[in-house]
Image 1 (cartoon, rainbow, N blue to C red):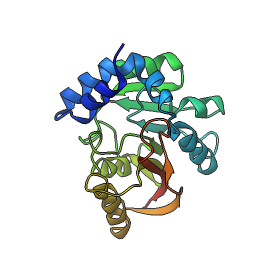
Image 2 (cartoon, rainbow, N blue to C red):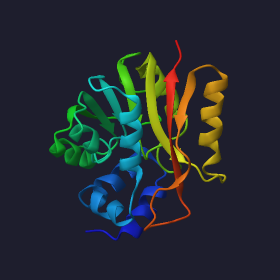
Image 3 (cartoon, helix red, strand yellow):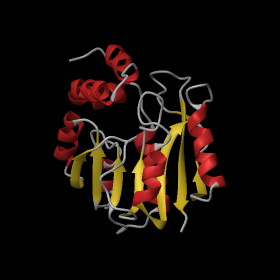
Length: 211
């Protein structure tokens, strides 16, 4: 059992993928309990946005940086299937496998080229990972590449602006300007961990991949 504050320091202080993988492997068993203690809202908001925009039967779907599968579990309970999860941590993937929500689970790190064919997925889902200390904004390039033209990418990032969060906002707007994708929907900013740090806000976005 780990102190949640100490493991958060380790996660956000990771300098390399190996450091990040080790931190998440150590956290895997306690992750759901710890973030639930923060009052995490992302799984519920993300699943609501997904269900509003993605028809039942749409597959395959990439769950990028799937973690323990907590973001996909609500969707599985609503009847969605065909999820293929990738994550940097074997420990997290082990927890995700036990949920029974996934057609496949593979260790891959966002921020690097993904071992996935172009236009493979009907939709992509990435909740809670695109943030400083986790996956870099350039990860969005690979999500666009592996999602079919006309497919939707549903993802989240921090909505409060500072020097660490601004690059993600700038990058999403640049992808729109470059006609890589089209904005479809975004939530208002919301406090994502009200029982943790009330200053942290997220938004969930929906973009359609351009032809």
